[in-house]
Length: 446
Image (cartoon, rainbow, N blue to C red; front, side, top):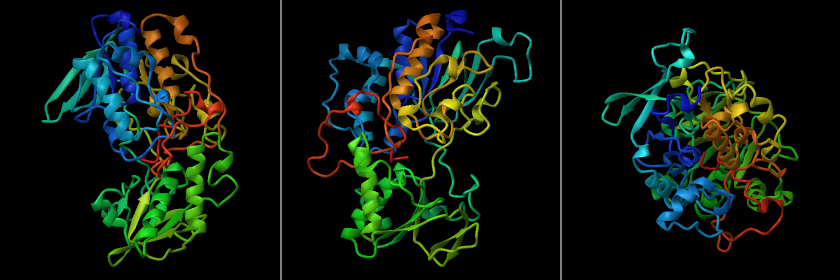
């Protein structure tokens, strides 16, 4: 079903983050009416959750062209080429964009269910002729139902971090130890957060850019606060690619991040434990002991930072017929293109409505959520996704199928850059990755 079949109904966009707001801008550009439903009290709630983390990419690489056109009449000017933090991105671009969209964006509106009006997922008869019923709950507990011509789910994966347990389920005791476990990169500039880790022994579980960021920050803290130490827990061994591309990385900021994590280990501020698949978390007084599936037990730690990835929340889509890959939980046609066993950020082909379609016509998962559990999502890829979908909903199939983005091949996928040292937040040098195709949304704040 295309939006033109129910032209009087809005296209509901779930989530007022970078991709959701870009989707709204693209729909406006196409003459369609979006309604963005954001669970938080302001735009980019998830991005604000890692406001202290700096991106790898410059401002030119994190804004959508249709969004810039909407902002231009307000006098908005894209900030300079410095690398923004998550907070910069939210305050200086995403919130102004949401403000321009005005009443098309609703805050404190949590989507609790999406279905075909009058049809549960079992019913075939007349299904495609029915609009979508979007159920939501407001901050005061009030329930509403909105009728929509199509649904674009850009709610992301920030709210559902993966657990510590190597099986994909929480380790035994993980939930009861929640007071000593965090699933985010800590903001050590916050005095309360700093006090939590200063002078203490902290386990960092994970092997991606978020773990690199946490290790680097904890190493900096260890240089200032005696007794601070990180224990880096890896499910695999340490090999040539463990720390990313290093000096050979086409994104200097991303390479520097891996080198900082490597230095943390080599300089003794962190110790690495390899081949450790966490099975249980046990108490030792006020401290925690991690136990592996092979019976190994680590020395007690005071805190644990779990950075093992994110996963999509599909619960409110239970009455929608989705076609998802059984491993990645990504759309079936997209999954082979983004499989992290095969692809890095730069080898994922740009894709659009064809790869994002489901058996249920008129519903799309976009942005990080479209990637399911794959950790290779690029913002520019997300902007291309919603450009294609908006074209399809407007009936312009030729534009929907046309690829308007070329990605260079880059090195190991990354997260946040560490540019807090003086002189490091400058415009990057040239090279292939100076083109606007390199933002990794899943930053060290995840």
